[in-house]
Structure formats: C-alpha cells, structure tokens
Image (cartoon, rainbow, N blue to C red):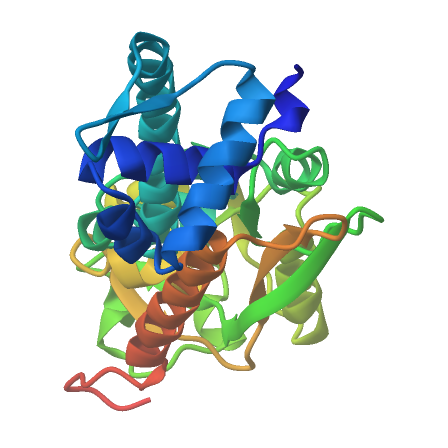
Length: 312
C-alpha cells in the first residue's frame, strides 16, 4: 500500500472513532451519517491491510495495531493543526516577513517610524529595513531580495514597476541665526553670493537646482558638496552654508535648522517600486499603504508656509 491509497476522510473517521469511542459520536463530530463512518472505517482497514477495531460486548475496541497507527495519525494531525494555525496568523497579519529597502532620504527617518508603528500593530511580522542608493534598491527589488523599495529618483528597470508617492517641493534650509531666517519665502536672488552646500553633480536634484539659478542669473559660492541630505543638514546646522534639500529630510530637520519654502518650486518626487513578476503579499500591501499615508501626512504638514514675524 502506498500513501496515495489512503484518503484523508478515512483517516479522519478512524481518528474520530478512536477519540469518541462510538460510531454515533464519531459521525456527529464529522457531520456525516453512521453508515458513512462504518463504510470509511471498512475502506481504511482494507487500505492498511489489518483489523483496526474488534467488537467486544457490543462496543468497537481498537486493536493493538490501531493504537500504534493512531499515534502516527495524531502526529500528522498536529502538523495539520500547526499549518492551519499558521494560515490563520497569516490572514490576521500576525505571521510573515517583510523586506524593505529605501534611499537614505526616506529610509533614515520616515521609514523607521512607519516600521515601528507597523510591527507594534502586527506583532509576529519580521521586518528587515535596508538603506541603499536608488540604483541598489531597484536592483534588490528586481532580483527578489526585497519585497518593496522606496527611492528618491526615477530609475528605469524592466523588472520593476514604479509608483509616484509624492511630488512635493524642495525646501531651503539655513542656520537658525542666519540673516535670511526671518523671511517667509526664499527666492534665488536671496541666495546671491551665499555659501551653498549642494549634492554631487551626478544627482538629478543637483542638475535641477543649478539650472534654476542659472536661469535667474544668480551666483552662489559653491563651497561644499555632500551625498546625503542628512549630511547637508548637519553642515548647515554647523554654519557651513545654506542648501536646498528634499521635503522629507527638511521636515525632520526643523529643530536643527531654519526651513523655508523656496520659489520657484523645484519638485522632488519619491517613488515606491514593486517587482513586475510577483504580486505584493497582503503584508507588503498593508505596509505600503501605511507608508504612503505617513508620507502624505508628513509632506502635507510642511507644505503650508511657516509663520514668521518678517514678510517675504
């Protein structure tokens, strides 16, 4: 006899009869008729090749072989119960894993806040949060190393599907005691001759910033370059100059530097990226929804013009 000769319903009837002691009770537990249970037991005995129950004083009593077999059946059903419990936990978002990668602009401040809230609400979910360049994030999502990515610039890839999360404007940041900190909105002419901290030339944001100042005929003192917005914030806080940075970093930088709207606006989009070959799991979809909501709320809070004493 091979394992494929056995039918799960036969095994269930055998197990129920052992536990309930009578055909009547076994039938009730399985929600079938008594003859159906008797037929299942007979078929099961034929499949295994030996007698499972003997009738003694009007009752069916398990044979010694049946008791040994029952121990194996119980071990198998414990495994099935564990599978059912795992499925229930997965449905309830209480079990599973999530691998998230993000560019520094979003992965160093915003995503940790979202992850902390997510794991608190869904205990049992294992989350990995990685910080990489946009190109590396896209490659990790495309290769399946991460479930979802968040990037600060559009990186085309045939295996990745991008979704624009926000398209907010960049902010100007200044030392807290800077002479321009009293202005409500800053313009290119305000930064004439100012020491300016910029991104490297390879960055899309750098090209957009430089182009705007050229169009307005404004000369800045290009004193420093830094790769990360957080590094630029630290340089500005220490009085090294002024800068334009992404709105997410600017929102978290307010205690350290003065943050002001800049006109004309330089849009700074953020993207969420999924694999095109694999649909996101329920856990991934829920996390993305929470990240999207948190980003919208954060950027929305800082889109309004700040209240300062001086005029524009």
